[in-house]
Image 1 (cartoon, rainbow, N blue to C red):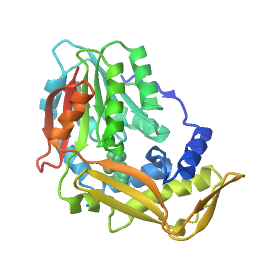
Image 2: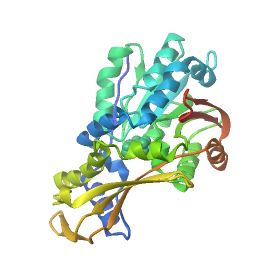
Image 3: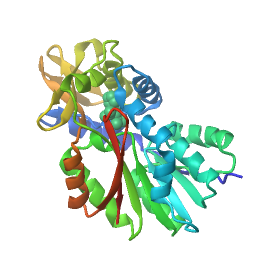
Length: 324
Ligand code: AVI
């Protein structure tokens, strides 16, 4: 039997409006990539993950589907019940391999998927029990840290945290270190953290993943302007902005922007007006790439010990296993 409970804290409209205005009134302008994921954004992101150019999904799937037994061995101990908490669970297509292996090996664990998207948690609750009827599942919808704290209140068992899909790349290196320190502060000795990192590689290959020919990534970015139009009474002219992606092989920072194609003024809500000069940019997202050495430095600087890492056959991606 699966036990399903959802804790819902809806990211409200007021916060979306406030954070949008802070970003658009800043110089240079920016938006927060967490707002990409409304229902349409979730759908476009699924399309991105299926794109030929977006190698990340296949690479991590290769690790999860071919090295599950080894991974399960590293994170478990006989007779030691634990909680498996996944930050940004998405549709769990990758983690389902691990869940299956852990169930088959008869480990006593509860799976807590945490996601900021209501749709994602609702879908998981509907679909996971169909695939894994004996899974103990408790979906948590909301902010990562609030929900992680909630999970630690619900259960005091050893924690194994999953933060896969290169989600850590959507923070710059300093933010990633602070984020890992905050995680460490909520964890205890013996707990583990598994983090997915996209590795530095041929710059053309990285750039193509974020600037695809069919324009799917472009529509992913532009959807945030549409979301503002839909939810915050905005009047962005989508033809007035163009997607631009860049990759710096030195720093490993892959960045995406929307460029204003003309001088224009955009209304948001009843009283806000934002001016854009021709060629002015809005910084939309970072997708940071790492070397193995940089991953180790990140673990150490945030107080974790490196246990091991799993890499895909092509050497594109790494799931690093850290402990306290
Ligand atoms: C969710 N995240 C890891 C994706 C990435 O690769 O940075 C988001 C994304 N943005 C554009 N394409 C994919």
